[in-house]
Amino acid sequence: MGFAHGIGAGPEIDVADAFGAKVEVTPGSGRTLAIVIGHQDPRPLVSGAGGHVVISIDDLTVVALLEVTAVLGLRHDPGIRVAGPVNVNEDRFERFAALAGLGT
Image (cartoon, rainbow, N blue to C red; front, side):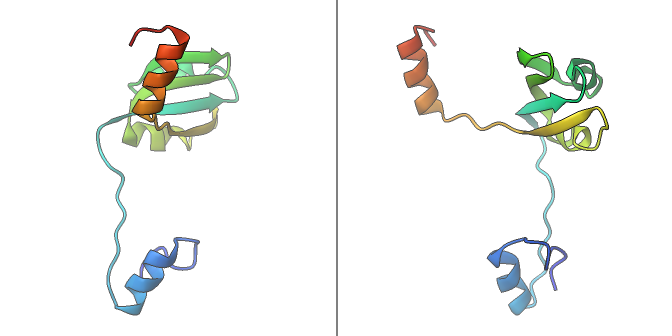
């Protein structure tokens, strides 16, 4: 039985279980953009995790460049409410940038 069975892992795990397959999920490595929302200013926590704030949205919300493992670690920090990856659709962003006159 797969380790994630029964916790809402999805039909892929159920199929793997049916065939006796072992499914392992490991976080990827490398850097990613992440949104980090704190119960307090998250910038010192992002910096302490080796990250770099790219955009400060407000006093409690930033978009930062972080190692994937650092994002996972921030999720468990009591000063952080939310930490998760941000996906950017490059085509849509380029259209937005052109309309906004950002000159990408």
